[in-house]
Image 1 (cartoon, rainbow, N blue to C red):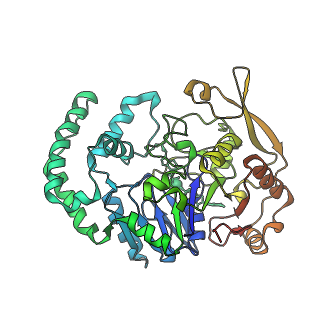
Image 2 (cartoon, rainbow, N blue to C red; image 1 turned 135 degrees about the horizontal axis):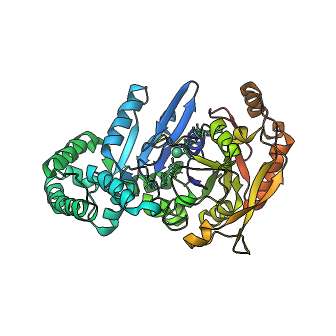
Image 3 (spheres, rainbow, N blue to C red; image 1 turned 90 degrees about the vertical axis):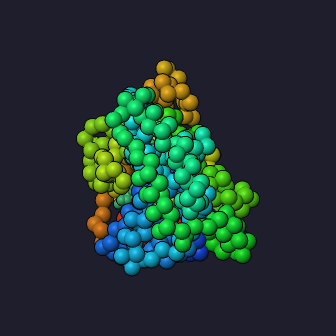
Length: 434
Ligand code: GDP
Ligand code: IMO
Ligand code: MG
């Protein structure tokens, strides 16, 4: 039952899409298990770029794709995405969980209203309705994929929810938005018709696959610092982004997880609000942002950039039980000299080696840096040659940086990514279980 979970170790956008696509060549199934269309996972193959929000990043290898119960599904986005990849020659072999919760138009309206209401405490969400959909799930107001196929239940639930949402919007949030119950029902029924061919019990599907010895790759969305429990509360997302979420989000037992690969970007990036201790607000930060083309995949917002922070990395190793790391964007960090790693924080005269829980304390954390010699930038052709020759062809200073990350995380860096493309990847050690 070979299974491999891939998760982000920072604030999302670490390059999970690229790494999952790279690893998917050896998978039979690729599965999303949490998050929703707030995710934007980029895959570059040749001159083509794909930005996936709901479909797992195994689609270009024509693998079996699963959107499991823990995902919140915006049917409009999913239908559009299926049409897009199909028109580009990749008709997806998709299984969609009958238990996954559905994001409706009122969730997106509520998302915007809540952000406005929260003011300074807003997290700068992607406005895709993610928080309100998960809220409804936990409060037991949610619409599930199976409800899209059952008109009677659907009508009953929408009739319950719409006046309540309308009241909350008008009274609490002073919003002018008008919800149309009939329109919501018809949109759901239409979506159900299109998606019905994919709907199934994905927990049974995945357990059968694992028991038969098929290889299942689980693709995390977002990253550790956005996790609802372990991240920077309340600035993260509304789901658990850690590897443990694969059990509840895909309906498999913990004994079925073999390997956990954490994706780490060689520096820090953050799209959205909230404290980021190593953020560089000067020219250096802008240089990283520009060189790394750091714009949000979903919202197009500029990502805030800064030096690598060891505190989230140690936390990621611990709470995910990482068995390996894939390090990305080593080519972007090339040419910066020196390079810095934050190894601890100073706050109110104290030294902290772990992320504090309190928002005020975390906001007052100042990074304590360790400096290392940078490595020279290379042309695209030189990076390609290095990728072919392997790990030892990397500049010595780059290898020292990688090995320092291994010391900090106490986890082996098994994959090193030095470019957007599939080929710009160095395989250093086996990631899949034997
Ligand atoms: P994800 O959300 O974790 O899948 O990451 P995104 O796709 O949102 O953002 C990562 C960006 O970095 C994408 O544009 C990728 O094409 C790009 N990328 C990934 N790995 C590398 C790398 O090693 N080098 C460079 N230059 N770009 C990379
Ligand atoms: P991928 O999978 C980066 C951030 C938003 C916001 C907070 C809450 O591409 O790495 P939400 O819409 O989830 O309620 O927003 O989380 N965020 C992400 N940042 N990458 C993502 O996904 C993200 N998904 C959500 O910017 O601060
Ligand atoms: Mg992304």
